[in-house]
Length: 202
Image (cartoon, rainbow, N blue to C red; front, side, top):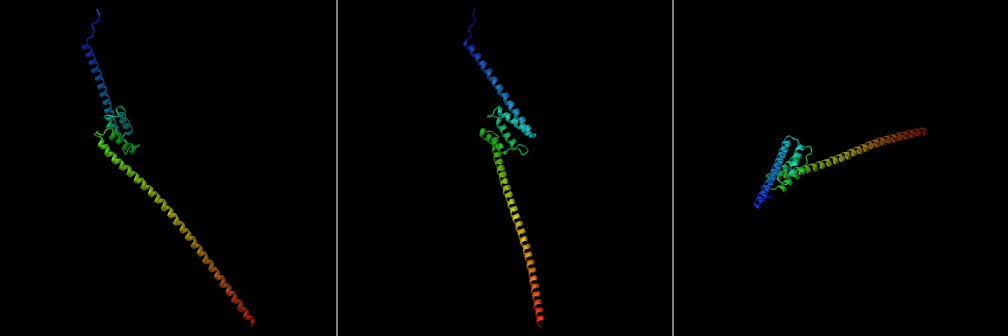
């Protein structure tokens, strides 16, 4: 009359079937997620190749959001570094590029991208050092230009002072010459007066 109790064997098979079903769902979900990441990575690489840097950056970052610590996050991290290092990217940032490559080296040391990332870090650090050296040289040149200008102005002032002194000397010479002429005339007048006195005394 009542139902037959389910045997232990049937219960085991039911649990096993349920486990296989759930595992299969998990594998399918993981496979779908991996496919989405690969698609986003491919899209990002295509966008990068066509010069759409902002859109490619978003595509690579979406890969990191889906799975930040497993492939293809290594390739996405590498490509983010490439975007920031690209000379035609309007928001180029070598420090961000170096940071991205260093994250790849740290998080994915066994990645096939890690060795290239190390090379990029070396090249970009040299570029940054050169940039700073150029900036320092520009500052030194600018300071030298300022000093040259200060010296030029000082020389110009000295020339003006020398010219003023020359004019004053010339003026003094003229005044001395005039004074000499006045003295000479006075002497002549004195001589003439003396001569007239002598002539009267005779």
